[in-house]
Image (cartoon, rainbow, N blue to C red; front, side):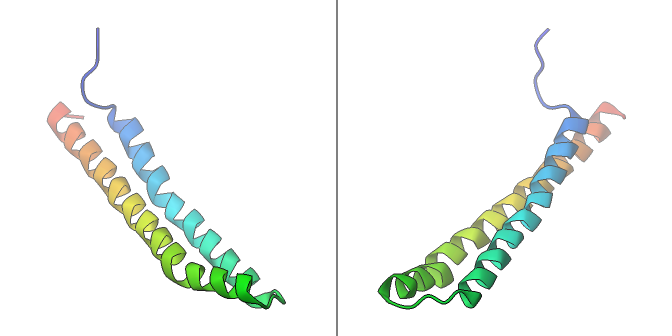
Length: 88
């Protein structure tokens, strides 16, 4: 028998996993910030990387965090709705 839909427990677990990954992304950002600030590095390569990091790269990380949060909440709310519909 084929299944259509989702397993509420697995969907809840996925939602939690996605939401928890926001902390991992924050950790990457904090680590790179710390290393970048505390590394003796001068010249055009450093300037270019810092420009990209504080602009485009950081914006990308923020988008990833937003997407993880949205997807995590969506999974959790869908799991709750499935439980309600299934009567569990």
